[in-house]
Length: 343
Image (tube, rainbow, N blue to C red; front, top):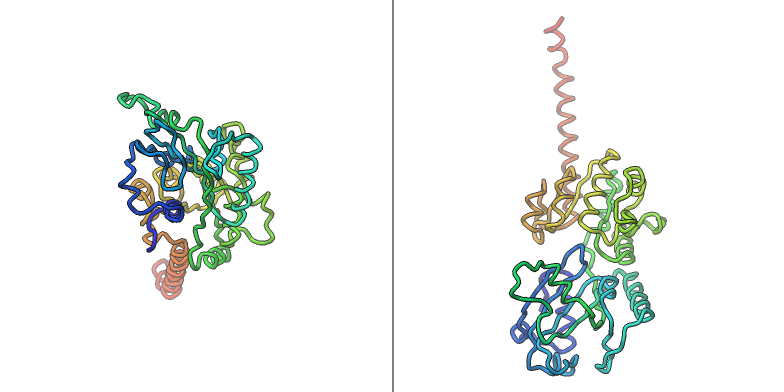
């Protein structure tokens, strides 16, 4: 069988099958609450009804007596770890998660990230009842999320790879030779972003990672964005922006435009809409893109492939060159007739 859907979700389904879950899991475990992934939270959360069970699956994580609900949170490891107070051990027991343990986990994340693997952390918490008033309609999604993410138990890490599409490295080189600077803005971990950028030739062998790739936190060191002059100096040399928030993309586009660059921005989510609208050419993904992103864009990429953008630029330049030649030919042939009118 072949998994379909989001490139971050599909590997989790594969991992679940490997540890003993079968295809009927969706029917056996009723989902009570789902809080989708957010670019600002860098994580998502679900709450599932596990009443009447003593373990999650055969040989799986034991559930304490009286457990009715199970909260599962997944996302960026450095964000998840901030809310974890304990960890699940190999024998099914739990132990406190100390600062030394968190550092050890982050070292593992760094190791896998340097291999261009996308690493997600998985954490859980059990409840006897919902930690908030389900009848309160005024509760926001963020408030529900905050109530369910407290005192999490770290279960483990999942590392997966989103393979480069055929032809992308060559297309990046072709774009560079054509005078187009390709910049990658991603929510991935910095080391993951650097490894991927090197694989697809966005970063070249001679590039200094400390100069050409940054964590977007440096754009807003004290919570507010850098002054325009410092921002422009930074974006003029950086080609990889990691752990980016939607508002970071907008500021980067504005900075490049202040430098006189004609910017083309790609995106697929609702939060990408401001940056897509701000760019000189907004390019939305046709397959995975949301309707909001498509509506804010000037162009829709039907195959979600970067190579198509480079091919379109090449054909556009050929057409433009043809128009220039045609106009030059017309002017040179008919200049004598025009001169006769005036003289």
